[in-house]
Image (cartoon, rainbow over all chains, first blue to last red; front, top):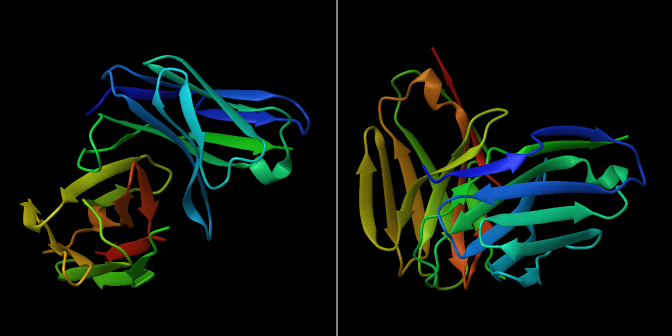
Length: 114
Length: 107
């Protein structure tokens, strides 16, 4: 298994506070992704990165920002958390090359906004 | 955006039964994943397919590129196979996901 870890794994925060989730991978993968998973919606892409300092929006990016200053770290920030951002967040990574590479997921971060 | 449809949404089987999950997608792809997620757990890629058939233990995955269809089969199902199975296809550099199939295997 690829070494991909997320932190924190569980967090409860108050509405309006900033929250940062960290994804760390040790495989030197070029591409990294943040997804959220909600009942009835499945997995949805928030943001992704195709290299250091290179990021792009996914389908549910409003209210989220990301940063990638090093290959191994991809940070997801909720600038001002809202209850609608209560979710399970998954990070993923894969090597470069178009479409044919295995994707590896982190174990998930459970975020509750109260 | 590539639409990915899975069926059935839920499936209950008795231990030992043969299980099939289907996945259809709308546009051409380069590869398809079958993912497994146990309750409260992480997500693991079981297979990545671009053509033909792959087998790993009791799991078999097939894909028909012309028909834009893939199937995941579980032979001799076991309660530990109880999980959500998700079909996902590469759409450029991003994955498009099906809604998942919840499989419950009763002893």
